[in-house]
Amino acid sequence: MIWFVLNPKSGTTTPAKRNKIIQAINKQANCRLILTEYAGHATEIAQQAVQQGISRVVAVGGDGTVNEVARGLVGSDTALGIIPIGSGNGLARHLNIPLKIDKAIQFAIQQPTAQIDACYLNEIPFFCTAGVGFDAFVANEFAQQESRGLKTYAKMSLKSFRTYKPEAYVISHQGKDYAKMAFSITFANATQYGNNALISPKSKIDDGLIDLVVLKPFPFGAAPIIGVRLFRGTLPNSRYIDMEVSEDYVLKSEKPLLIHFDGEPLQLDTNEIRVYIKPKSLKVVAGVVE
Image 1 (cartoon, rainbow, N blue to C red):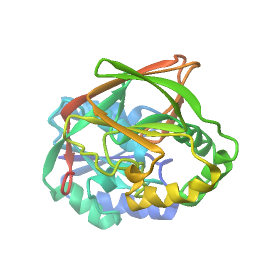
Image 2: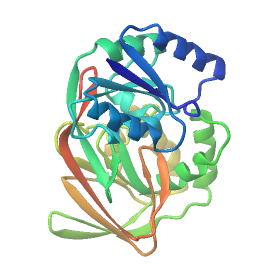
Image 3: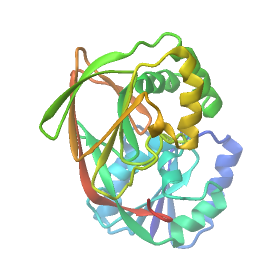
């Protein structure tokens, strides 16, 4: 038995297209479709699936829905599948999951599984990226918009760039402290945010390590070049980038931190976070894992 979990409020699809997705899933043998009803419901469904010995739970939605389902499966023998209908589809893209719905459904049912790492930020699970600074600020602004998609995200990024100011952080790992002024700081388990924006192109999702990407303050004129590098996968070559690799980090700021995890914003009531990894603790339905 395979369960499909669909968030009816998730993704960028129209109601008509969503109905087609529902019909396509309902046609599959030995599959059950469950619609979520509230925030966190997808995690509860995933946990129930584990208890009942369900072999696969397929998240139908965006990165937020994928995160909710995945957090309920970590440490179990139940595999995560993905039907990507979100704005960025970061984990699906990294795992080489088809973006076309019909192909993604068959992929979720038939494709073999692999083990990947799960990461945590103050006990909050993430599977692609998490971080602070500009990216978290934009994620918070984006979450408040009525329309979704790359166009809206790009619009909010440009608007935010005009007003956002770099901040001071202290990052600790491997017994050393590093004081840094940063425009953004990303903890990467996978290569990208989504939409093939490759913030950490060399990240491997099953190596037991978290890649730290610090984007230092840069002049306004460098922004277009940084943007091009982001999508071409050459960002590490920029002089405005510092990168480290470790199993865990502690980050401190002068004020409570606004974070993002897999694109979801969250305002914390603490100025300190710990980021760590649980190697190969999540089973996924995937193409070639990198």
